[in-house]
Image (cartoon, rainbow, N blue to C red; front, side):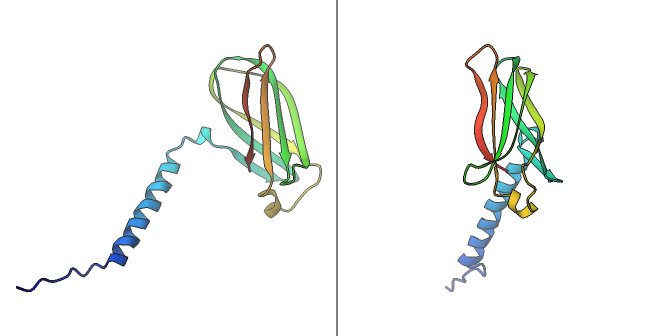
Length: 131
């Protein structure tokens, strides 16, 4: 009795498995709601950001957003008072930079933000994020 080996090699199977895993990861990242993603646009020396948040309570407070270089040098900042509602939302803000930079350099900068309620020690979203 002669047994034939299938024409599909181990290398081919491994390739298709890798393509399947990459495709699955890409489709899962697309399932994340648009409102829950950090967004940034750089134009004319200003960085416009959209920062998603989840607030456990409604209230007023102070939002501070800073743009930092990799060495933590402050490149631009903004601060404003606002009211937020309980649940999901997004802050949209334009931050003028102290000096314009080429587009390819803005990719290395970070955004640090913090929302502090007026009447509590509660803070919503305090961490640096890569642009």
